[in-house]
Length: 319
Image 1 (tube, rainbow, N blue to C red):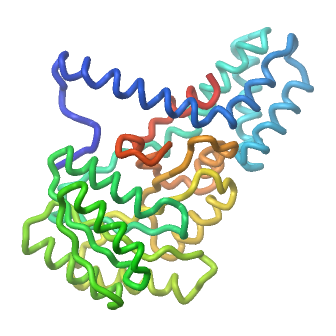
Image 2 (image 1 turned 90 degrees about the vertical axis):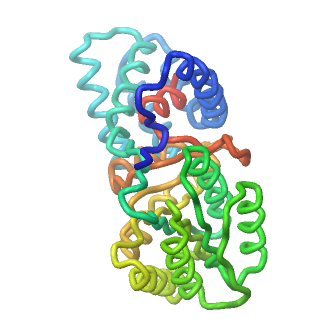
């Protein structure tokens, strides 16, 4: 069984080698979230803790797309922490906000575990432009680096560019791919899951066509794919992931709700957090629709997709 990025008791040498890589990743995350974090951090540059500070913080959180519910929750929690800690300096309030945000985001932190079924079938959905196919390529790289054998299914059969893009990722990661030209997406998925079972693959990753949740006939196609996958393997899909663009803010939350209703999401991949001013949307998701965030991404490179950790995110955003 593979518990991604939760390796058993790494040796001191291995841990020392991995630490700089993680620090490098966190540096990219901080840089990516600077637009969001700087607007919130300026609230704490004053000299007094008063109503004006909380009003400015409320405005900053809403502008960062944290949403009304999460913003009010954070403000109430922060006021309680300030009172209990008896802090008097605004700078100390920021440290308490990091604690409050990390605690709010904690339920989203969950590792992707594969290996309980063989193959583990992972269905990936998302709107056009969210970075879905690129995220599948990065996820394939991570799975392969953990020792898992991966088979890709190019179920976006009507867009040649999507199929070709996935074929490039398959070649870069040296993994097999099942694809057709203009065929039925569901039949591609059936063939891929059947092939994954026959070939003893650890993971079958299914790339579906991008669509908006308002495109009801296309959402029904996703449901059909899920049903057909279940014909190939009654227990599948074992994971249903949604890729969301961190720049879309509250619209990302709307997507999570719609795709979850249609498919029953098990996890999220949040992309394009580099340069966004709307990084607060994860707080909104945590408060209103707490689907686990398995991975977050800050760029196009293979190593720019990493596991989500609540405290790291809160610190990168605000510290």
